[in-house]
Length: 255
Image 1: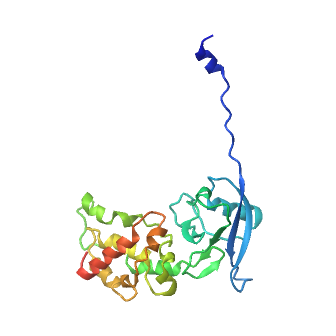
Image 2 (image 1 turned 90 degrees about the horizontal axis):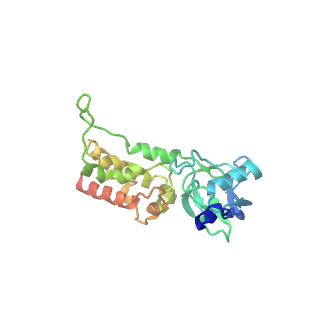
Image 3 (image 1 turned 120 degrees about the vertical axis):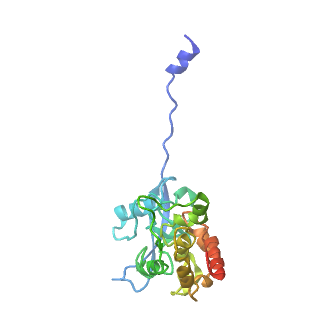
C-alpha cells in the first residue's frame, strides 16, 4: 500500500472547540422612575474571545436582567446607534471584541457623556442632531445639472472631502470632547465634520454660509485640539484634521 493511500485513510485531526470563560461587566444603570442618581451593577457572563460587547449586553438582557436598556440596530458596525463608553473610551459595542480588552479585570460600560441621560446606556440625542441640522448638511447648488446628466466631479475634487463622508452620526467623537461636556452650546466635532463634507464639495455653492455659521463663538474656535474626537471615531475619520481645515477656510473666507 502506498504512502499516499495511508495518508488518505488516516483520520482527520480533531480540532479543539473554543472554550467559554467568565467575564465580569460593571454597568452604570439609571432608571428615571426609581433612581435619584446612576448606580453601578455587576454581571458575570460566559463569553468567547470572538464575542463582542453587544453580545454580552444581549446575554445580560435576555438571561439575567430584562430591564437593561441600550440602543442597537444591525450590529454590523456601521449604524452608529450603540456608541457607549467601554473602559472609559467611546466605542461601538458591536465592533468591540472581548479579546481586545483586558478580561483579567472587570469591563466597565456606561452611557456616552455630554448628553442628557435617559435610561441606563441611552442618552437623549436631540441636542446632538440639532447641531447637525444647524450646519445645513445637505447639497445646495444654485444651478441644476444638465437634463439626464449627473453633476461632474473629478477624482481629485472628491478626494478633498472623501474622509468626512464616512460619518455615521454615532456621536462618539462629539461625546468624547471635553469642551462639549462643559459647554452645551458648542456645535461639536460631528457637526463640523458634516459641514466639512459640504464646504469642500465642488458641487455645493453654500460653503460661505456654513463657514459663517461655524465662525460663531460656539463654532470651530471652541475646539482645543485634544484629538479625543479622532481617537474615538470608529470609522477612522481624521476629525481633528477636518476641524483644522474648516478653521483655515474660515480665515480665508472660502473653501
